[in-house]
Image (cartoon, rainbow, N blue to C red; front, side, top):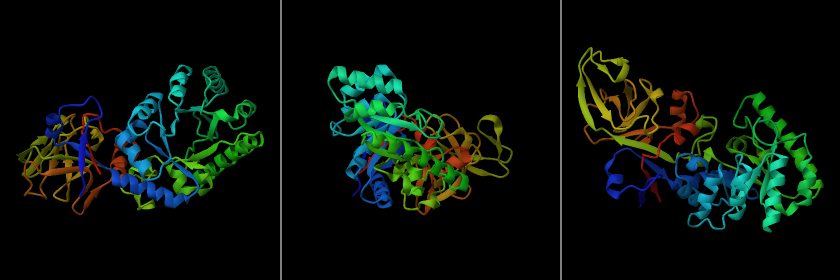
Length: 391
């Protein structure tokens, strides 16, 4: 039997407050484990898996997801900020975890990260020198991962600027990894595939130089897109992010149907009213009833991360059937047309993302409606929405 535990991500509220509001996110940790298994089957047994749990695990909850990922075989955890890395290190069960802060950090963060044995991405010769200096003064290993910029146009030491290699070779024990990040590895167009291969060529040339100089660090590059489409880039370790959460990186779920969505966003019908012909619904009067229409009011809105772009466009599930959103989504509520579900009543569950009965609404579908990507859909679920973790 599944057991659900409800938590909040900000300051803990009372258990009474947590159980009152019908709007909630259900996080299926078994789906996290399943998706890690999809990664393992795709890469074989050799490469390690770094589960990316940055941005509060893409809105799912960093610590519970990280724990499930490790249980499923991940041997490293990727975060974006020093604060995230330190918080994870201090959480129960992660005292000895291999943690990497992948995004740019500033020099003043080095002492705290090294003191907690949290790995750090370095994208400049200056920052590499600083971390080595800090480590030497403290008599500890720096545990840095050198980021090579091969074409994404972000942080990193350019692939054609190898001056760092001699410094790294002289401090090889401090170099835990060498990595790059792909720009279009999720793409399926010929030019996107060609550019990813070019990035691999550039990266592999740098790695060969580093190894010739005596730097034998963990080599990693593959995000979710590269895991699925570029086996060449699996190297020593892969870094699955969005696919852990059951979302296809290209927002085309049919390309990897094995993935199971982890997050389900749910609410309930809080009120019912009958709109007569000519009545308008919500701010701006953007929808007008053409006939008597049963309208349900759902107590969720963009204050919870359900986007205003869904106004008059999205559908939700009620009693396993799709019903349309009518009028503009408000901060704390939105309205739905129950004409095809006249038996619906107050308290009935409403599924914004997820499955109900035979129906399903995926994050990829919501992303297309909003003109964004699945990553943003889950990250936008705000902290006032309680998360319930199914074990």
